[in-house]
View 1 (tube, rainbow, N blue to C red):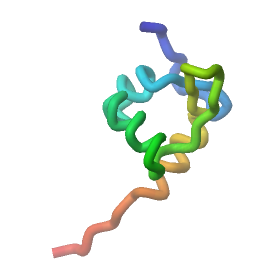
View 2 (view 1 turned 90 degrees about the vertical axis):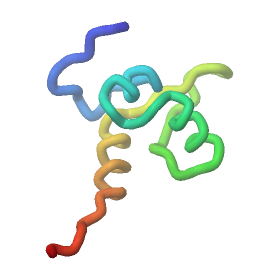
View 3 (view 1 turned 30 degrees about the vertical axis):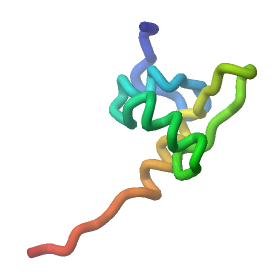
Length: 71
């Protein structure tokens, strides 16, 4: 596993494994979302490799934020 900088810059390209380590979902779930839609935007780096811009991942996660009603 590679060491990621802290903080991770928005323009850094990260892998499925990196996102899994950061808590954005399991690699299998990210792959499923990539194929069916609904996941973060990705870059096709080669026929068998994808990457994600960290800024795009953060924006995707922010858009999925749900506010609950106060009880």
